[in-house]
Image (cartoon, rainbow, N blue to C red):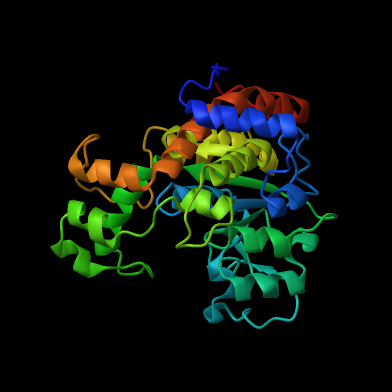
Amino acid sequence: SSSSSSSSSSPQLRRALSWLDDHKRPIVNPAVRNHMKPLTRTPDPENETVLFWHIPKSGGTTLKSIYKCMKKTLSVRVGADPRYGHATDKEIVAFEPGRMGASFVNVDTLTPPGILRAQELGLVPSGLADLVVTTNALNFAIEHLYDKSHKGRVLALFRHPVDRLVSKFYYSQTATWERSYHPQWKDIDILSWAEHINHDNNQLVKTLARVGQFGEVTEADLITAVKTIKLRFIVGLMNEMEESIHRFNVFMGINESEENNRICMDQFFGHGTKKENSNPHPKVEEGSPAWQVLARDNEFDMRLYESIVEIFGEQTEIIEKHARSMAIWNGQE
């Protein structure tokens, strides 16, 4: 049910994209292009390690909880926590820290030093992790953990950029356990935060186009970001969480009709739905002064998000086709 028109994209973006198509310019992020498989290739979960790009405040904590519930093996920071006694192992192992059934690989794939250790221990070739999670080090992780003989899949959940930043502002005031904890933000209103303090602008385009944190983002960077997502990412949307997880399950080879998987899906999307990590906070109305400042400062991420919503619609058909060919689709609409 995707609209084939790109009515939401600006005319200059459409012109630039068609120019690039005509000139066959390799515009996709090179690490992603070389080390990740295109969406058109049928998933092969036995031989592919799936990478999840966890964009903060976009539903990633819920996603991790779902796969822990399904007793999957994850590569996250906790696997290298010295408390569990595997932080200095000389080989890659998966272990179960508690009785919850989920297991973790003994590496931290969130930081560059952790990623280099995971590379050295052969995380991806080992095939031990069902899901490798990374955040800010996306490009570093794709470059170092994967290679041309061990290509993977990359998934991400995306959220409207203004909503994401509003959530970050309120969450960071109370989340004492997070590295991004900022209790002093309680004393300022969101408009002055947006105008004077927030520097987390156009973060997605910057990451995908490999622009530095304080670099200027250009129209060409936006095109790189859109093309990279379109050709290589399995796209999820935070406001279409259940459908997104169904799609990710296809690439992870998860059969939702197996009892435990069905129970987990029901636990998160059934009647007594769990909302992990949801932090109730005041709403910032579209068009309000704070909303306008955040939208203006994140113009490129806003336009990227519009394209991502379109791509989500466009991917429905190919993913359903994969699912049918893999015989694990359970008829969810």
